[in-house]
Image 1: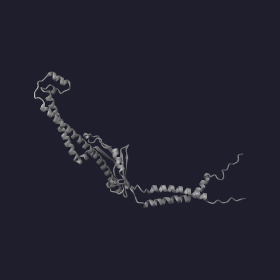
Image 2: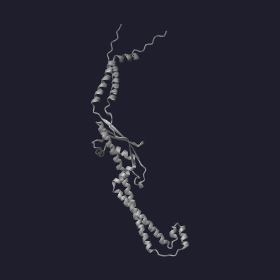
Image 3: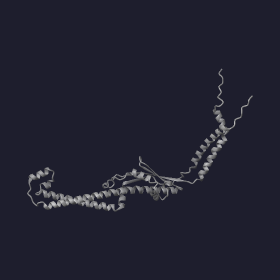
Amino acid sequence: MNPQIHPPADEITFRDLYLLLKKWSLTILGISLGMALLTFTVSQLLPRTYTSQVVVSLSMVNQTSQGLLNNLPSLAGLAQGFVDLQNTRLMAEKLEVADPTQFFSARFDEKRGLLFLTAQGQTAAEAGARAERILNVAREYLENSLAEGARANIRAALTQARLDLRVAQDGLKGIQAQLRLAPDRAASNPTVAAALEARGNDPQAARAANPALTSLSLEESRLRSQIAQLEARSSTLTEFLQQPQSVGQLVSQALLVQVLVPPAEPLRASFPRPLLFTVIAGVLGLLMGVLWAFVAEAIRPREAPRVG
């Protein structure tokens, strides 16, 4: 017959745990309910904070516009630049607050091309109005930055057009000087005409009675046409550069800002959240009550064993 095995005296069994929790059940329940009620009461007294979030998709429409929109800053770089400007005096003035980071936040998801704008307020209406404000400021920042890039391209194109115009005008002066020295008449030579055509000269000039004069006249006509086109381009670019609204319209047509989640007044406060906080406090109170039971039982004086 096997002897009965008894657990060591210092080993805690599940029965011991059950009896301990049962003994301190009222204390554990009281701590849990007390913390839950206290948290719920404090949550009701705390000032409300409402949060409104706007989600914006950014993209550029493919438009040539004669190179005026080429080499512009990337939308990803501009959006991240707007995010980095949140803690600056410029944003404080634009958003009309002393500390923008206290009420506003911005985050850009480069992989999806989404700009997340968040605004907070003490009321739902205030949060919605601030969300509308940061959306307008972000749109204005992007449009102004792209417009400045477009104006830089226009100034570069205008400078290039003026340089080309000067070169064409100098070339025309040289051609006109040669025309004054060229003979008026000459006999047509079929052999010379064939040789000129073989070397790639214009057939009309090669077969003319005076190939040199004809070639110079054609070059003069080409330069006059080029000068007229460059003058018209320079005039157009100058006029375009002097009209900021035209540059703004050009950028607004190329920049596609899609508001996926518009500014709106939230239905409930984002902070505090009484129900969530109460549940968390109740769970923590339960754990603290169990811990208190173990500590109280551990430090409770033990009765000395009786000697029979």
